[in-house]
Every structure is written in C-alpha cells, then in structure tokens.
Image 1: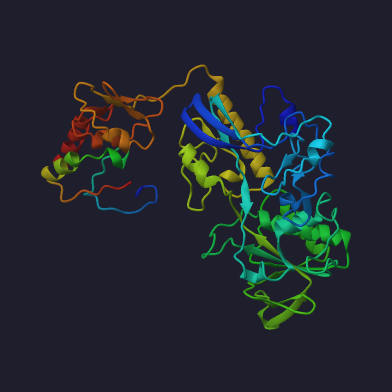
Image 2 (image 1 turned 60 degrees about the vertical axis):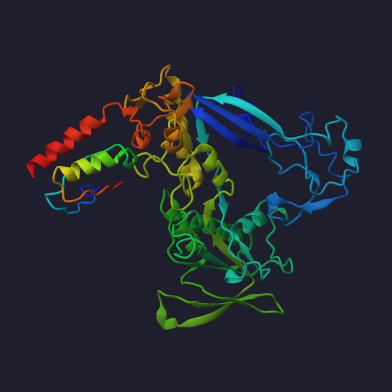
Length: 44
Length: 446
C-alpha cells in the first residue's frame, strides 16, 4: 500500500504479507517482538 | 423486456422479489417471492376490468400525477401485460370479476415462493431518484418546484397529459423554466459523488424537448459544471446553447414563491460574470435535477447476497478501475446503476460485459479454485464453533465429527484458524511455521 501510493517509509520496516488481517494470530505478533522487533503494525 | 420474455430459456419473474440466496458459484439456491397480483396468468391485458372499478388511486408510474383504478396495468409496456390489484385500495366489490371474460381475477391469490437452482447471479437493480428533503429549494412546499423524473413523465407521450407540458399549480404552460443541477449530488452534506453527468444530459435533453414544442419558452439551467463527457455529448450541449437555452454557472441557495401567481423567484449570481451582481429572476416552473441514489431495496439485497457496498451505497465491484463488473464473490456480477450512477450507454456496456463474464464462467465444465483454503484436522477439533462464527464467507460449518470447510466458498483469509483455540485449522501454503520462519529471517538481518 505504501508502495502503490509512493509513500516513503523507513528502511528498517520489514513487511510480512498475510492473506487477511484476520489471519494474524497473537503468537505471530509475540514471536516478532520476541525476536527483537521494536513494534508490530497490523495494517489492512 | 418484451424480447427477453419471448426468448426461450429466459424465465421472467416480474412483480417479484428475491427473498434469499444461499450456496456458491455454480450452485446457488434462490428463493423468489412472486407477489400476488390477484389476477391469474389467464389475463390477456384487455383492460375490461379497469373501467367498472369504482376505486381510484395514484398512478405510481406517472409519479402520482394522474389517477389510476385499484385494478390496473402498471404501465403501457408492462411485461407481461397482466392487470394487478392494489389490495390496500380494493374494496372487493367484485365488479372486475364480472367484467372479466377469462375469469382471471382471483381475490384469494397469495404470495408464492419459488425456489430455483442457478449457477450465477447478475445484479442489475438500477437506481432511484434522490428525494430532496421537504423545504430544500422549495421542494414539497411550492407546487411549481418539481424533480427531473416528474418532468420526464410530464413530457412523455404516455404521461399524465400525453406529453403536453404543464405546471402543477394551475395546469398552464410555463413560459419561463429553470433547471437546477446537482440537487443532492456533489454536495458534502448529501451525496458527495457526481451522478456521472446523467442529470446534466437529462436536463439538456428535456430543455431541448421543451424548446422544440414551445420555441418561445425561456429556459435557464443553473449549473455547477456541465459534465457532458461522452461521445456526441458535448455537441449535444453546444446545440442546445445554439437553440437559445441559457446556462448560468451559479449556486442557488434559496427560492421564494409569489403567493398569488405561484411563480418562483430566485436570486441568481452568475459566478462567471460577477460584475453583473445578484439578480432576482422569476420563473413559472423550477425543475430540480436530483441525484441518482441506490434503490431502496439495496440494503436488503446486500444482506442476502453478502455483497459489499461502496461509501456511496452502491454495490462494490471487484476493483473500481480494473474490474468494475465482477464482485468479490465468484459467480455474482454487477451491471448498470447497481454498481454506480451511469448513463444508458454505459449500462449497456456493463450489462453485456457482465453477461460475457458469466458465460466465460458458466461455459466451462469445471470451476478451478486456488488451493489456498483452510483445512481442518478433525482429530484436534474441539467442536467449539468459533470458526463458524468468525467466517466472513459462511464457508465453515460445524458437523458432528468436527468443523468442515466448503472449499468453494472458502476464500483463504484465515480468520478461522486465528480464532481456533485448539489449533486444528491450517491454511494451505500459509501455515504457521512458514510465517514463523519468515519473521525469524527478516528479523535476523536487523
């Protein structure tokens, strides 16, 4: 989305494409934070 | 419509309503309520029942401008040409029954439910005219302020006066007519969209029609922008200007009525020639070019078909520019103004495109689906039913031995597995360990 509207975003953001925000489980979010991510944005 | 009725293989259900649709592409179950006409199909539309009927009502087809009987044919070109009875008005005197040679009138008829199995659904529910609130630009207060659809009926050869122009207050032919454009559209407080230039073209057409019949009529069109985008449209607009129709770019906020003559006084400031200042002009008839809005039944149909709607209330297409025909539900397509305001030509284009989109789907013997679907491990399933509750597509159902996914209805969103407390559901190609690996890998680089 940020790409299609040519928006700039920091290079330290790592997108993970998921079929639907409904698919996101708490364990995935916790895993990302556990592995050292500062935060997780769920955007749809 | 007549041609459709004559084509073999086409079944028309007129004066009917879709009650329910279930199933999926290739396998829809449709329930249709055929409303009771109280006249059987024996009727040949001769009209002998209409004369003896003693009860009068308003003719909805002519915007209530002329009377009709309680038994009536809805309009001259109605297909099939069968009379119907308005049971809210009928006094059951039986005079029509006596007059009918075919014994077609049956007061005991009831609504009939028909169930059908169909492969695909084409939605072409059309539009309604926006009804301005009472008092807005004098609508519903001043008799000589009417909407475009009413003028359309007045000018129609089968209208209340057989096409002779009149104004409602005294029935006289108006000598000065004002069209006000964009009523209820391009308005941040009402509908923000433009009705696709349709109201512009109708106003130009009707002003030209009036000018043809009564060349000495003074016709003004108060507009924001004339949106004559389309083949030959701009030429049509230019031709109307040559015929002497005056276009004034302005915003009209208030009208006043002369209580004696019922003429409408309008304060107009031409925003293209501001030096002229505010002027008060008097008109015999004011026509409001009201917006195109979704039909009243859209809310109900939206729930039945589980379709999305856009912000403007029209049905939402797959993609507004790349695929304005299909919907997100396979097997359901949109045509005409059900998807958004559009002209006749555009509606025909979309209708044909929708038909060919369906024939491409239905012409094949098989329907291919992607394998990105939820699967249930029935041994792990605790039969809690959370997946069924959370599925936006009604694709998962709790059976005796565990949840079962309908692979055609399932769209692979994964809402069920995110909500499954026993982790019994997986999404093919998008399994949990795959995501975990992906997250681990991208976070390693940082």
